[in-house]
Image (tube, rainbow, N blue to C red):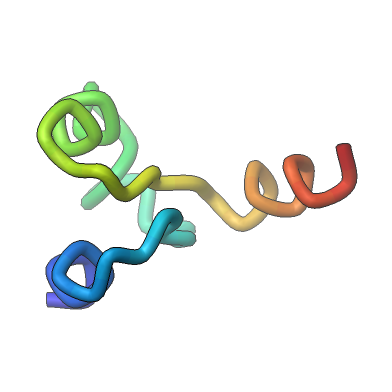
Length: 51
């Protein structure tokens, strides 16, 4: 439901540490292949902010 709200509202980035639901086993790639919202962990998001 939270990811759906991000997509519906046109958010660019969805930050989550729930790797089982959104990242592991190719889930991130599969979701991002048809969404305009990128899915990042907290650490990945912070790295992007600092670079």
